Length: 115
Length: 114
Image (cartoon, rainbow over all chains, first blue to last red; front, side):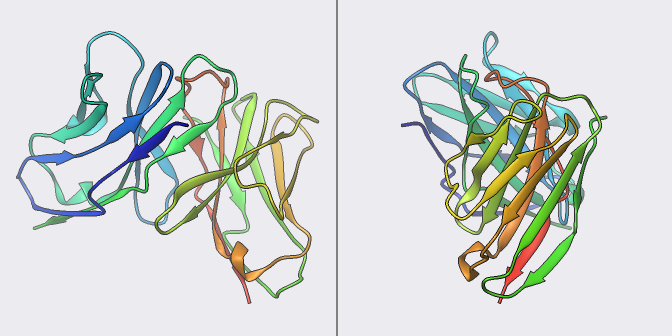
């Protein structure tokens, strides 16, 4: 069975600092990986996704993520965070190539950016 | 920009009550989904559909029914609500069900079962 682990339930960083949110996955097939963000009182929005090619993918608002097959990881990074980046971040895994539309969500990481 | 609208925004009911959550998407997406979000569990799939009249079972379907009446509308029904169904419910849609599809989420319905 596929699974996603986000080992850090909460992360606090200062504004302007760099950020890495960790994600580890387990998949028996081809992994399709996503990062979604949930701002307060809103639904989830896609930040970026990976399904093939260059292991470093760029997303919105300066976010990027790096896929590593050898480490089974898909960590999210940002060079300089802003207070508006405070939100919950979800790493998501899909059963690649199938038509089930089913995703496996990590438990989320709550990011707090201190001014 | 894909639009997914959920109603109501908040709902309070009693144990054994009957609840319907509504979702409408206006982007001609084929797939629609109902998730519940609970602290420590991320999002879990209840039911999904790939077209009007179609229903597929998700990962946590017990106690829930769903119906896709049109391409746009997907409803989640709790016929005998229980306190364990107190949760934040999200509807989402996508054009296809292929692995790399982007999901577009509504703003959620917070359900409290007393």
